[in-house]
Amino acid sequence: MEPAAITAGLDGSPESLAAAHWAAAEADRRGVALRLLHAWVLLIPEPEGVPAEKDQDYWAKRIVHAAQTEVHQRFPDLSIVEELVAEEPVTALLRAADDSAVVVLGSRGLDRFQSFFLGDIGLHVAGRAARPVVLVRAGASPAGDVVLAAGLHRPGEELYAFAFAAAAARAVPLRVVHGSPLPVQAYAPWGVDPEVAGALQQAAETELRAALRRWCAAYPEVTVAESVRMESPAHAVARAARGAGLLVCGRRRHHPALTPRLGAVVQAAIHHAPCPVAVVPHD
Image (tube, rainbow, N blue to C red; front, top):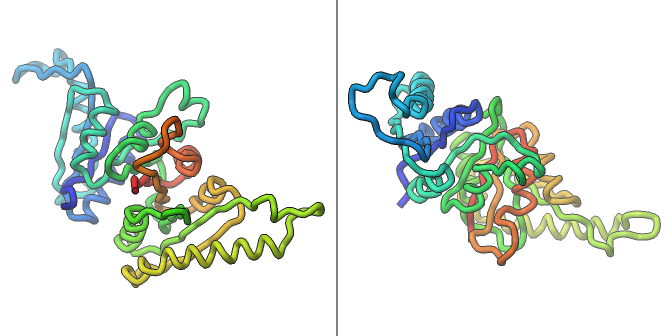
């Protein structure tokens, strides 16, 4: 059964407020409730009637209430639940993901160096959550088509379902992008052998069309444009995200030990894509 809520994680930043607005629009499209969640490990419920200046939870409450007020002005009929929890943010968000259709978080687009030293809640949650996680930058435009970063090796059902449903709900085209670097045999002493490169690209295009066939039949109202680029998948996806309204990437639920939970394509998307990025776990 589909969970009956979209959860937005709040921390008081402009990015988390942008996430709340994106989550509200998604909840409104799906006809489900919006949960505004703020986790603060020092949260201690105060007795009723305590003045605001003496309430140590005042700022935590204000973060959630301010977001609720803004969202309610735009979506007056949307069911909104405010939730404060006394937990570490990552723990609280992973728990919330278990009974949410989507978890939406703000993203500052930290580069790899900053993320290594500062950590990033969005990366931790996106790499571990049981449900799709959408990362939203402040100022990101919701307009534009949906872009799907498609792999050809065991493509995940959940990934394709999420991307096609997102495009259908928004009544926008779906661009499916696959990147594949040229192998060594495609190079000659003078450069790239055009015949070998062309044959490889044609084979990848045929495989991609085959993977999309049943999804195109299931969503005939969605206009689909396929693109195979003979370059690094991370570069191809980051380039395709320009001007998009949503970029959809996949993450394997099960991965080999000692390997990153988020692959190079997802990392590049989170750090460089200007649009919201959905990270969808799949088998």
